[in-house]
Image (cartoon, rainbow, N blue to C red; front, side, top):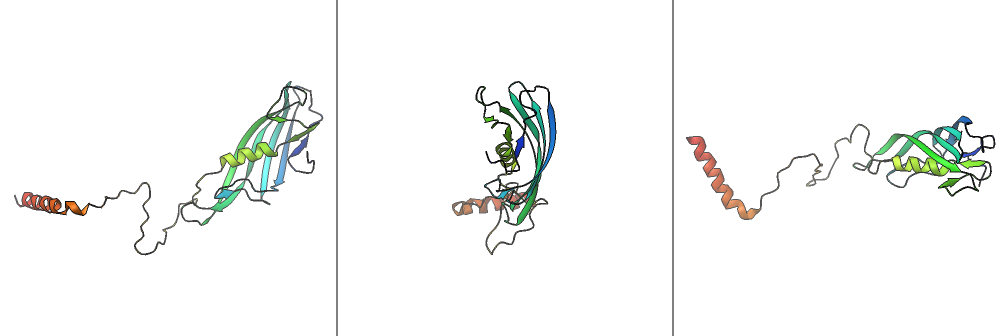
Length: 177
């Protein structure tokens, strides 16, 4: 395990000491971006992590919050967007000799990076939009943007034009009466 990463925490004083607890605040400069879609927490941005490390019989429980900003582009208009990210996480890091866990301690070291990364990536929107809504989009002539909430009549099939003429005559005759 790379001890130099800012996510690695020394937990020697918590190992096999059930009931012991430590709280830590980490200001992490993200070494690689989190996310693969239109928006991600970019490499070099700041992620504030508040973590509580609790010793249990099975291992060390790491729980806390991560707060930062995700940058990318709007799915509708492709304008740059910055969205706040605030996620909670909780993961049990098992002792190496005990039954296998998803995450295990490496000696007296605990690596928060996969847990924080997974929580952040899962919280990112799949199709981010501008915070206040997109401005009117400038579309070329003859191009219309129909949003999901827009109500629009379907164009009539030209084969029904003769019947529509009868319907218009019927409507006019009813108004005359």
